Length: 381
Image (cartoon, rainbow, N blue to C red):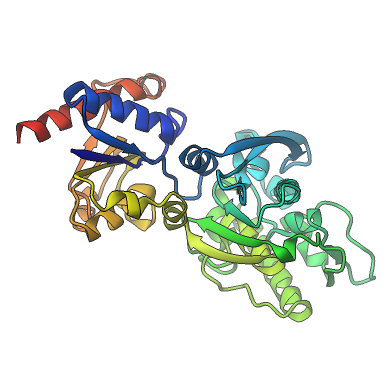
């Protein structure tokens, strides 16, 4: 019997690879000779780099870059097993985790910058890669990718024709009057960029970067309006000087508008994160002749169908009529919406009532026990 294990990470508890290991342990308790193929998955958010490195036998590159508040931070990116592709999570350099809760204020969100993400891109290009995948989840920024652009050589000028040398944040985009690309890192034009995103928000408006994601980063209502107006000005300058209209492209609002910046200044295409990852790890090819597929994520509810990892896995398995079993630490509302989307059964893994710290710590053993019990039922059948 062949099992495909294709889970996402369980945030703050297990990487996707560790979830695979825990699932495999549970299966082998019942079926020691089972054919088990582990394919750590992700959807473009946290854990995407680790999943793709693990799945392709790639390597990590550790660097120190500029954090969202201008501080120096330690980050890493990956080179996949083929040696031709880099994987970067923007959150490694510009993530919300670098901004403590007490600092998530209107003034802070106006300053946060994606400059460090641009530094990661520059570093990856030194390895001669032909393609860069960028995960757009978990940002602390709202700068439209202008900081990233500065790092890769784009120059911005104000109305007095003076270069804006400060690292750009969302609060000063309105100062931009002209953009110059003559100093752009020459490797950028030779490189394909694939953007992994689990959101389709445009750059501007009520569904845009500022309105939807600004509040969790510290923006109040007045700041949201200011940031949206600044991004609108930024998009207009881009259209006037570069000839690209990125304001309403689905996904251009991802990561505080980093999607728009990458679409403007690189050869970028946006993809649903889980589809991009599934393609990179050849999920469909390995899944075709499986008997069962196990997937999972930290929390499953109605939102899972909007592009989360288990949904992407289930959609592929459904094409081949393969049963999909999904595990989660938390089960929310709307699970009934998932059963027509390729999910056969969805299980919570907790063994008892416990606090969040205990649940996170007990994750591996809970995955193993739950998987074992499911496989016992499969064998009995």
